[in-house]
Image 1: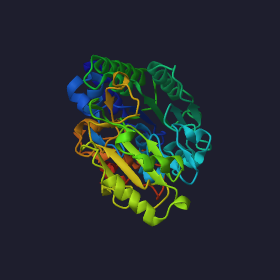
Image 2: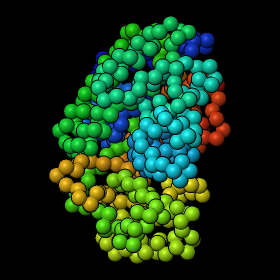
Image 3: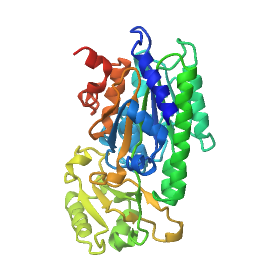
Image 4: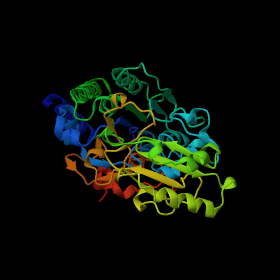
Length: 419
């Protein structure tokens, strides 16, 4: 750990003489499912060294704390209601289809906000991505893009980032993003308290240490590194499962069959959409009342109607993307299929409202020549990373995003130098 920290200290010192004409570089790395609690629990030496060399904070996921909506919020600076990906699985009345992960590759209409790499490219920057949710979205791909596959190792991703940074200046991307799913996978399959999770944290920490060493030894331009996660992980209680028969009676099942109602299920939420052409307001009110009065929930979930969602969910727009009803599982309960086999269920999950759930908080660590060092800062939502990166690269931030520049720009060196 001492060696890695000294390397980054050297990097930062050399960054203090960073030429004003040099092109700034930002590398954004996401460790899917890495809870802020893992820093204290597992004490990953290289990640902790990065935190000491820069700024560190708990990162608050947007609702719901699922992978796709949060990675899109990080990379667009917008809440799900504004970037279009409202859950890992949801329905679009406008498109008449259910979303599947990566659907933007075939239809970019799913995305209603531009990713950071697209904004950067529009302003003349080269960008690169080695796996990021929806990086293949039609018309929104980065300059260099390696599509998601299940075979490429974590090491291969770090090695490719180094290769991109070694390109000649005119070819070198100034923004690079990559995503690592191994910690999230271990948390799901074996649980957040498992030996396998500990090993996954150790493995990614080791690779980050190697990557930092290569940055210091092999890369001439100084690099700003931002390490984040989309959410943490909770252990499920597989005795607290919610089957469809506990929610929908025969009458509602028939409405689903007749497409009066469309249901999109995730293990922590169920989104329900009314087909307006097949139901009137009075009928919808009766259905809502019927589901609200359901006595079978046993405090396993709550039902919320459109217009009455909790304010911090940021689902207050009266648009088709926002479901008419949301059934929210109460931790550690989950929604399952009717014929589920409890022996086959994953042990860990996420997706719940992250407010007051410390294990669902992600991480934010940022360091480099443009960033102050040695500060633990207060918790913030991940939508504010976009304008922070914009400031680092001197990119004009779109006015339509939800992220606010003032949340993090106080931690930029040039802002302090100009005071």
